[in-house]
Length: 98
View 1 (cartoon, one colour):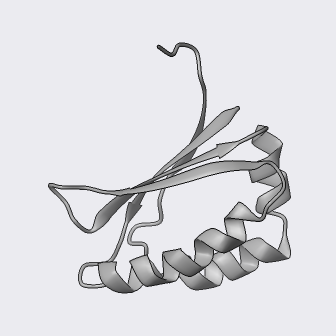
View 2 (tube, rainbow, N blue to C red):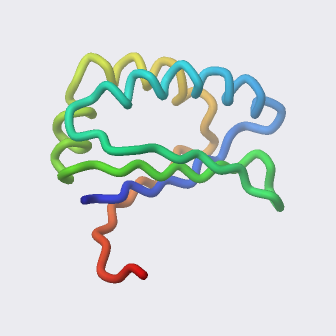
């Protein structure tokens, strides 16, 4: 399992619009092959910053499958104009749990 991590800096004053768009966008990503789960959290100290965590079966399910799909074009249309600056997306493999 791969965990995608992205801090999403949303332009000030657009957080509620972003959340509405994300509600639509989550149906797009959740239908993607290899998708496991998704969690979106809002920062308490910086309410225009969100933390997105997505579990994928394999790294390629995200980097090649989802990002290379027509569904990603719709995801991008719905969400990317909210970000300033554009988020850094990183992938993690679990090494310990308990």
